[in-house]
Length: 468
Image (cartoon, rainbow, N blue to C red; front, side, top):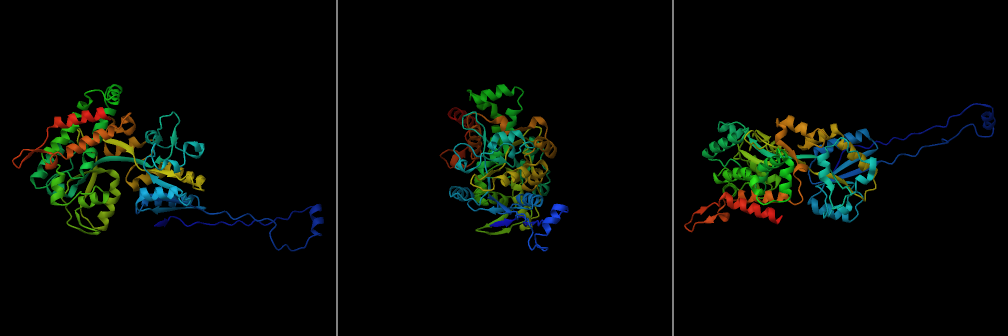
C-alpha cells in the first residue's frame, strides 16, 4: 500500500531569445526572416523524482508530515511511504532482488552479521552529503558499525530515542481512590490497594515486563555510580560477585511477583490478556478491548490493568485504538517509579533509517535524511511518533518532560560492554517474572508449590555473567 505524500510540480521555463541592437546585428537581420517560429533556445524540462520509504507501520503520520514538508521545500521531489507486510522478510527479499524503486527503509541497528548490511549505503563515506551536526552523538555512536576494526562505518541513522516505563490507567486508579504513584513506596502501596480490590496491578508479557520496569533503574545504577569507571570495569570484566550489585532491583521484582502484584499466568488463564507479546495485543489488553480474529469490542471504559510496563512509542497505537473504539480510559506514560525517589530515564535508539545502495536517487535520499534530522523537523517527527527526538538536547528534553534529575537519567552508551550485558539482565528478570507460575516453582508433592528463593535467581544471574 502506498501513500503519496505530495503532488509533484513541474515547472517549465521557456526562455525567449532576446534581440540586441547594433550595427552588426542590423546587418544580420537582413539575412534572416523577420519572423522566427521557434525559440532559439529552450531549457530542458526537469525530471521529477519520487523517493519511496518502506516501513512496518500501516500508517505513519510522522513520516507523512516530514515527507509533506520536504516536498513543499523541494517541489521537484515527492516522497511515498509504503507499508510492507511481514516487513523483515519482505524487505530483505526486495533488497536481494536489487529493487531500485526502494530508496530508503526503516530498520533497527545494522551491525555485523545483519542480513541488511550488504544492501545499505555506507553513510560516513558520503562525506559532507550527510549532516549529523544536530543529532545526539550517543545515539549515533550506538549505530556505528562495530566489526572489530578501527574503521567507523554507519549504515543507518536512529530517528529518535526510545524510553522504557509504564502506562498507568488513571481511570482505574481513580475508581480505587488512587493517584499516579511517584516513587517506590507509593507504587507498592497502590499495588496493595488494587490487589485487595480484586485486580492484578501490573500486567504485561513476561518477556518484557521485568526489563521495562527495571532496566532503566539498573542502567542508572551503573551510569550514575560515584565511581563509574570502577563499576564499569568490574562489570565489563565480569568479576566474580558482580551480580550482587543488582540485588536491589532483582529483590523488588521478586517481591512484586511473590506478592502477586505481577502474575502473568493467572491473567493468561483468567482473562486471556497479554498472551502473544505483540503491540496490538498489549494495547487491546490495557484498554480492555476483547475478542479475536479481528472481531473486537470495547468491554468497558475502566479496564482491568492499572500498570502496564511498556515502551513510550506504543502510545501512538494506544491513541489510535482509543479513538477507533471510543475508549473512555484515561492513561499516562510515566517513568516506572521503582526508585525510592522516583523513576529512571534510560535512552536507547529507536528505529532508524537506511538508504538502499541500489537506489538511483542517492543524492535526494541523503537530502531527505538530512531534512528529517534537522532539529526542529526531527522534534515534530518525534512528537508524532511518540519518541524522544534525536537532537543534541535530547537529555534536556527528557528531564523537562518527566522532571527527572541528572542522577536518574542514562543512555545506552554508558552501559555498553564487551559482551551481551542486556541479555544477562533480561534473562534474569524474565526468569523472576515467571517465578509464581507453578510450571517454574518447586513442587511440594502435596498439590502445592513454592517459589524458589531470590538467592536461587541471583546465583543463576552470576552464572550467566560467567557464561556471557
